[in-house]
Image (cartoon, rainbow, N blue to C red; front, side):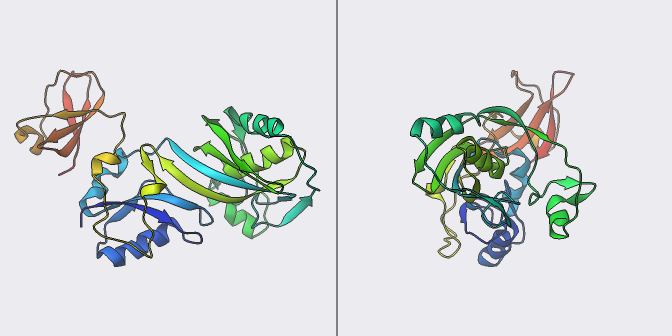
Length: 277
C-alpha cells in the first residue's frame, strides 16, 4: 500500500503507537512519519506507507504550528500539568494588552534550556531518563527561533495561543505565565498545521479509512522545485543529466509522477541523489 495519510494523533499515544496500529490497519510494514509528537500532545501526524517512505527525507519538516493551552496557578518540574508541582500562585487577573505583550515577547531568537521531560540527549541519555531516576545533569541551552505567536483565547484560569514550531512549548507556557506575574504550566498541545496541511483534513485512528489518502506531492518540501522531463531513460539508469536550472536540488517528474531527486554538483551537472520510483 503506497499511500500518504494525515492522522490526528490521540492523547496518550506515542507516534510509534500510531505507526504500529496503522501497520495492522493497512497490512503494511513499511510506515514512517514526518515528525514525532509527544505522548501528551495531539494533532497532525503525516504518515507515509509502502514505497512512499522513500520520500521521507524530502518531505516538509518545517513550518509546523501548534495550539498550546496554559493552566495558570502552578509551576511544575516538567513545566506541564502532569509534573510534580513546585510552586503555586493566586490567579489575580491581567489585561488583554498585558497578555498579548507577554505572548509577543516569545517571538524572536532565544536560548532555551530543555525541560527535564524532553527527549534531548545529554551524555548519550535522554533527559527524561535522568528525571525518572531523580539524577542531576548539566544542561546546555539550545538556540531557538520563534517566528510567530499569537493569542487564540483566554478565560480566568487558562490561556490558549498559537506558536510556530522548533521550540520547547512548555518553556514558552511557563514564560508567558511568569510575565503575567503568575505561575503556569502547559495543559495541552495540539499540532494544527505542517506547511500547507491542516488538522482539519486529518482522520482519527478509530475511524480510519484506507481510501482517505493524499498525494505525495502535497507533503514534499516546497523549497525543492519540480522539473518535468519527457524522456526518463537516463534518470531510471541513475545517470548524470544536464538541465538549465539554478537550484541545488530538484525533483524530477515524468507523467505526473515524481521519480527521483537530483543534486547539482561542481561540474554544473545534476547527479542522482535518490531514485523514488
